[in-house]
Image (cartoon, rainbow, N blue to C red):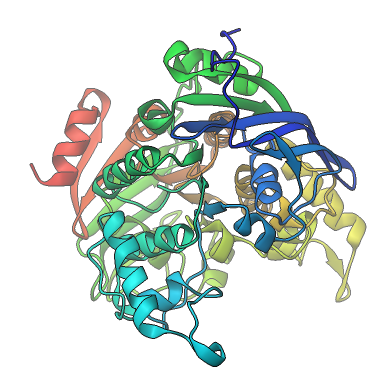
Length: 504
């Protein structure tokens, strides 16, 4: 066990949790946890999906109320009955998916809900735009406050979300997976922003599944596991292996399982596949028991190919053969009927209905198997959902639990279970471990290996080079909508992937 924190004993945290507990029906989300955030320092909150990190953020921002323990500011006990109270106390959060409004200007988005006012309550547009410009300049964002949000790219919108969080006089800044949608360049710009916030004396809570980010910018770490506090300390005094062991309670030495591929008959062949604007000249085959990796930089066209195969978009040319027979897949229903399913990258919007319970999400594409005479059989729905969620080691209080309340990793398991319940021949996994922790990644990887061993043909789209190399039997590298290379064996190295993806 690593040494506990060596923060000076007389240092008072700006914000602290002391023995905080939070329970929901059937589950204890937090069990007497503690956490301290210090001025001018970054504390990384580390843990698997379901460890309690999201619950902590909601308590600190006034969305949830703790059932026990204390929240302290500068050593004094306090409460945040509403999000407005948390904001007034100087706590702000930058979320992975911040809600912004395309039809409003940059300045309006930044000050939505707390715009500066003139006499009679009218908005002071001049002051608002001036303050917006000052905040944007402080984070190095060269944006016009009067620009409509719809005219900005994803990275610029993320900067607006950060500026919105900083538009209040914040003492504590919570960053919850802030780099999930950013490119490498934008991530480094975010690092520079973090350094500026530290120099301003802000206390920063940083939540990320990416260890390179944690070791790059965090001063301290706090580890939660299954809703309990495990340990804390200085990042400089721990290594990645020890941190992983604290997170999962076991040694995860192999995120990628040892597997001996047993390649069978050809199950899918794609010939001269093209789309009017997204991709062209796509030719590949896929066999039973094989994991075929697709790698490429952002915008390479990988997901667009998969969406066309699944019938979401319409190709302009090409032919698909499944089990040697030509097929036309004009819709997802056609693809499912042919034995091809697709687990999308954006599981929240495309892969699931978060307001429905787990069991209904799992059985949604398989209603023919769970109904009789036009009536659903709930017992059969539960049996089917239980069978596939158990195989994926889903962690939830019950199958009645609303999907939206689960962690990202467990939501991903439900989406995968949903499509496996259709008993497909081919499964496409688009960024299957994006945004989930190392323990859940290991579980998904192990299950992928199990599926391939059972003869399922797997296509895996991934931006993570270790995942591509650790799981794939072959790799297709895409660049600018075309296949740049097809690699196997000794040719599958990080260097070759990057060279082909970048066109070097």
